[in-house]
Length: 85
Image 1 (cartoon, rainbow, N blue to C red):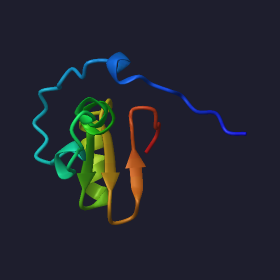
Image 2: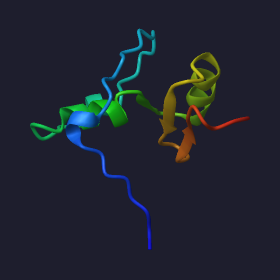
Image 3: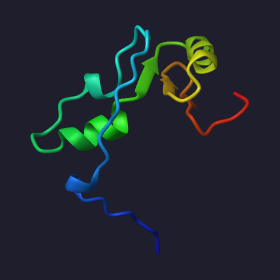
Image 4: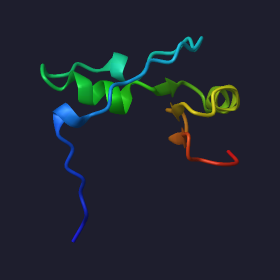
């Protein structure tokens, strides 16, 4: 049996926007969200950036260690919990 977490929409923490000079769109900026679910999308995808190249991911990861990055060229992930990438 798998475990799940139930998160009520009114209990999702407010997203504190970071003022970063990253010239990439977030994953949240790339999707359309059904009305009423904006807060969920902002919380989970608002600080996830999609890079075209893994080299770009690694460069940005060093500059912004608390931000999540995905690279589409090699399906690479670097996030705040990932060490030594």
